[in-house]
Structures are given as structure tokens and as C-alpha cells.
Length: 337
Ligand code: KIV
Ligand code: ZN
Picture 1: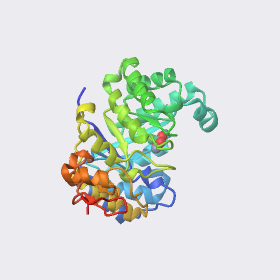
Picture 2: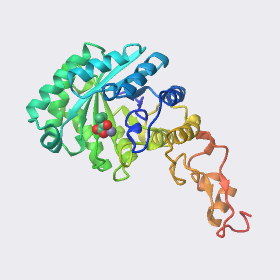
Picture 3: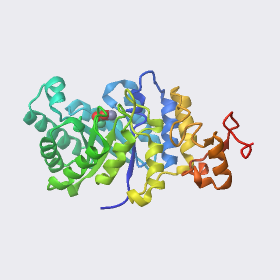
Picture 4: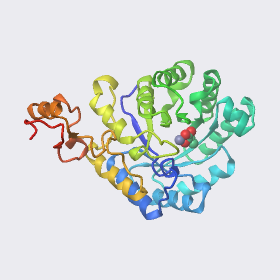
């Protein structure tokens, strides 16, 4: 297994689904260019059938951005796939991302299909998508709450049909990190043709575990992470790109993996996305928050002034911040002053 983790950025699709966020075409292009510069491997540029605006933005990013795979989301429906293929046509490298739910909850309440019906629809969607590109990702919505035996069956069938990347979304942010790691690991060991695909983590942050779950998935053998800048996205958001990239770097001893992300550009893109989306980054946000490299208590200031590593595991310049700060507060001591 390779140690390269592909970074699949979905700021412009799942991220743009954040309540209150609406990006125009220019803003999407600006973010898209910055993502290429940052070193992401795949940009999910939108959901082409969902609106003429989404079609236009996927199509424009496909024309303008080079050196990156452009991906469009579809439901497992013929029209969705045809429209996505048309929008992605000008791309240097294109990916169709299709799929449907696998949990009993989604099958019964949303899709109103039996397991067998859903499996057949999924397999046909992959076969159709493969007529337009040899890079087809299949998502199994709500995998985190699904019966693993059914998940194995779906994975085997869609890989046989031509899927090259298998997305295992924890759509509702329900799983714990050890469970998500086991889910990925068990899929890889139970599915006979699993060596023909890359497995992808797509975790939502409803219980604040998205980054931990994604890193658990990498330990379980996933080699793609689906992330957004600042962790923006539906409800409590998606996994933060910057948290995963820096965790893989700082804890290379633990994860043994690397990405192509230019870490020193993380702070700049975080600020850009915050400004363009209007989504404020909380001060204590890991990696890019305003307080992430600020020390205010006397005990910590004393330690940092003697030796930075006493209280800092990330050198702020790594992510493009200038330096750490010593903030004078009522809790500062003589040494800090
Ligand atoms: O959270 C999710 O399941 C998704 C899929 C559409 C990939 O965003
Ligand atoms: Zn999602």
C-alpha cells in the first residue's frame, strides 16, 4: 500500500452547502486556483445537475484549472451522470462521483428501495459513468450506520462494475474513530477485489469527531481524504483540510503517510475562504485559529520563552503564520512581561 494520501477537496460542493453560504463563479474560480496552488489532488467543483449555476461553475473550473482532477457529484441517475459528463468535458482529468445510500434508514425512508434494488441502481450508475471517464468514485451514503455485510457486497459489485475510488461517508457524523478505522479496515480485508480501488474517508462533524474519524480511516488503510477548508459544510461541517494535512505531517511517526499539501499556504487559504464565504473561523480553531499560536498564562509563557517546544507542537511558520504570540494578560508573570 502506498503512503500517499490523496487530498479531495469539497469546499466548493459540500462546503458550499453550509447554511448561508453562496459563492459566485468568480469566487469559486479564486478558491479553485488557490486549491491548485495548495496542492490538492482532486477538486469537487459542484453538483452539475442541481442548478445552471453549478453546471457553469463545474464547467468553468474544468476549463480553467490544470494539474488537478476536477470532480462532479451526481445521484445514481442517468440524467445526472450525462449532465456531469458534459460539464466535466473540458477537464484535463475528470472524475464522476456517483452513488446512493446503504443504511437501512436511507434505504427505507429516503430511497424506498430494497437492498437488491439499490445495488442494481448503483452498479448501473457506475457502468454508465465509466462510459465517460475511467475515473469513477462511488459513494455509499450513510455507511457509518449501515450493515457492514451489505457494505461489503456493494463495494465488491461497484468495483466489478468499474469504480476506482470507494467513498465511505459517515454522512451523519455518527461513528467514533475506532469504529470508522475498523469499518475501512474490514472493507479492505473482507472484499476480495478491494485491491482494485482506493478507499476514501468522508466524515461529517456532528459529534466533533470528523478529523479523528478521517485519521482513523487513514490508519485503517484509506488513501483519500475528503475535506473542506476550515471544515465548512452541511450542519456542523466536514473534516478540516488543514487539520488533517498538519496532523499527517506532525504525526508522520504515527500515520506514516504524506500529502502534496504546501502547508505554508494553509493560513492564507483559510483566511480567503473565510472572507469569501462569510464563515468566521473560531479563534481557538486548531491550526488556523487566531489563538492557535498565542500563549497567555504565565506558566506557558515562561516555558515557551525558554524553549518553544515546551508548549508548541506546531511551528507557526509551518502554516504560514508569522510567529507565536505572547499575550499579556492578568495571568502573565514577570518572565512574560
Ligand atoms: O455526506 C455525504 O454522504 C455526502 C455524499 C453525497 C458524498 O456528501
Ligand atoms: Zn458530505
